[in-house]
Image 1 (spheres, rainbow, N blue to C red):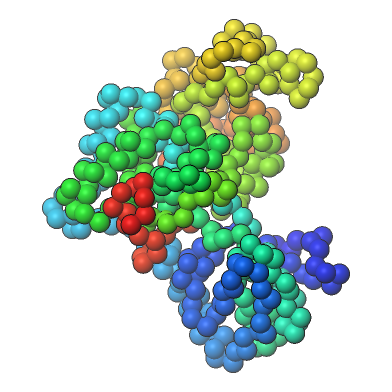
Image 2: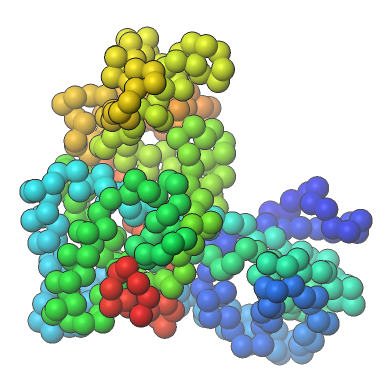
Length: 415
């Protein structure tokens, strides 16, 4: 889509912004002679690569083949016959069931882990469609840009972004002083020890076969079914990433607006309707009082509670979350006590009654772009199927496949 108003050295240009997800596979395995990658130390792009029309067609076909291969690599039954006679997904489910009996909070923990793993490095690529290769732009130090492609020597395309796109690649599992685990939003993520348990079982039976990224997605699918959610099929074949940086974590916060959240989700190829359904994952789990006190005591500096919250809920939360409390207590995200640990549509019924705990949750029921979807989910029977479909889409975000990435021996470190 065209984007106006971006500075460009005083030259009038047309800019096109594309979600990075569409180019994930291309950037990981670029077709030969199509893109020239530049050093991130800072450089000026060289003259454009000149290509004959036949070269352009060949490169374009390679581009399409690369994208098709990336989207086709995930498949049902991917591990069949790859772990001797063992059923990999059944093994994962067995460990999930055993751990869930001991700790039912595994369900919200894994749902949160998958979401946080997939929502990394949300960026847009800016494609500059201005032509003069004789005046290539300056590449700022620290950037990671790929060079130029001239179509019939007339169109120069420059793409520049902050690192390669990254999605569901188990990068959240990697240890390190500045890995994703250390980012503020991830410090309360749980379930790492459980993933280690699953990996240990699988490595003992078929070493180097099953990725940590697939374990996260399959285990989350299984535990959702154990708390009343849909039984949905997931395709497998993800590979594990080698990069994990706290600075790449880009998660929507609990007070983000619906409009801002929609932009973040679109950056990962998800529609606003997907966002509404995925936030329905708040039908289980808890949050801390520290994320609620602003709404119940001094909303946006008003000195009073958020007027969009049910007054009865305000009083209830003030009792649960006193100001300046020594302990940061927890609050159920779904305020229906009979349904707080069940994946169902009760969450939408609660926010429709102004009983949303997080500001973003309540805003879904009020914003013009999302309130109709909330009403349909609250009053209908479509949530389970839609939630399963949305979780599948989430698990397919910018995955590594084929020869990309690796299969880690330990989910906590690269090979």
